[in-house]
Image (cartoon, rainbow, N blue to C red; front, side):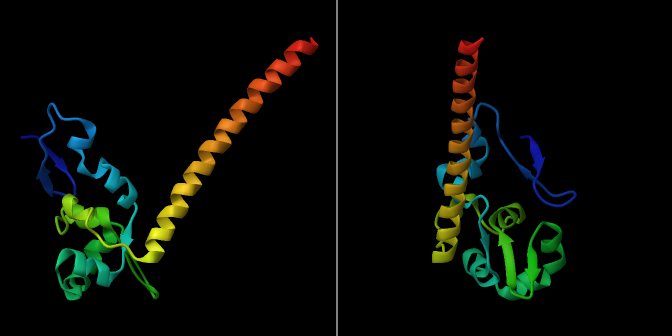
Length: 139
């Protein structure tokens, strides 16, 4: 079975990928995971989701910060992908995470921002095509 690095140096997880589609190769690329891919949890949420104590997170603070966890005076921001990399949270359990109303709103805002960018690109393309047609007739 092939191995890919998903954690720190020397940490590997077996990943069978031969003959699998991209979503099967990477369980994070499911429809549910696309909405939680950039999701970050607070310390309490991460402890609840993993079943570990907050003390375990504090004990591993240095390692977590190296993997991208942000710890500020206002709290912890623990990306779900870090928990999956550490093996503390399974990709299947990600779909069962209970999001706070704020997190749901943030995800909706991000989805809308992506839609706006897509529409801007379409509009720019249509304007470019129309300009080409208008100026071509004048020559």
